[in-house]
Image 1: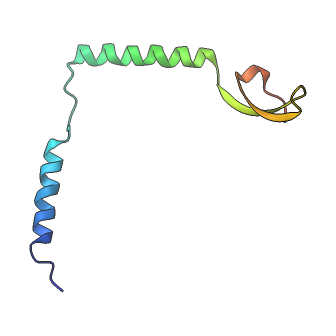
Image 2 (image 1 turned 180 degrees about the horizontal axis):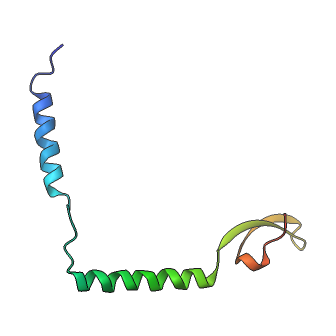
Image 3 (image 1 turned 60 degrees about the vertical axis):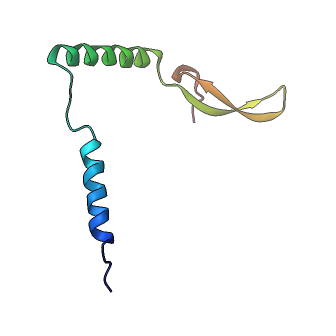
Length: 78
């Protein structure tokens, strides 16, 4: 079975698609360093807040199990 022109059309389409994608970093060294520090500061803030998890807890008032968002400090020991 031959595919005719389909393979060459697909190859040309993929070449155009690859040409449009960003290939390397366009920031200067100073811009890159500032961006890296900004992202690091955001991550440090997140780490200070601690893990944010959802866990199951029994609600005695409503008499059912509910999902609760919490920091790591008040998680039940399992």
